[in-house]
Length: 96
Image (tube, rainbow, N blue to C red):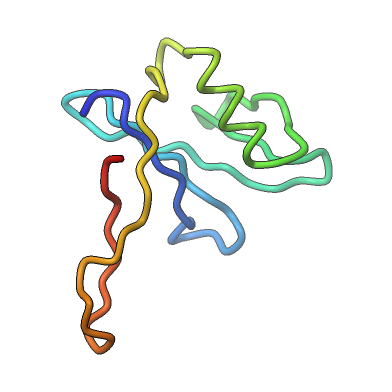
């Protein structure tokens, strides 16, 4: 759904996160990382946005302010267990 988003662990940078935003027909990914100034997100290699005390404050800011490139953060996704069998536990992000 357009505007669905989630925050997940970065697969390439330990300790960093990725904000994934559905903006049809693609899912766009933005890196979020911790710095001495707080949590920061980049939308392009040349652009550094402001820092926030917490990851929640960063997400709240971008839910309130729609960047043209990013699109709206409308529908948060939650990790949900798909399999009940403990040997085959698989997590997926599901719309709420």
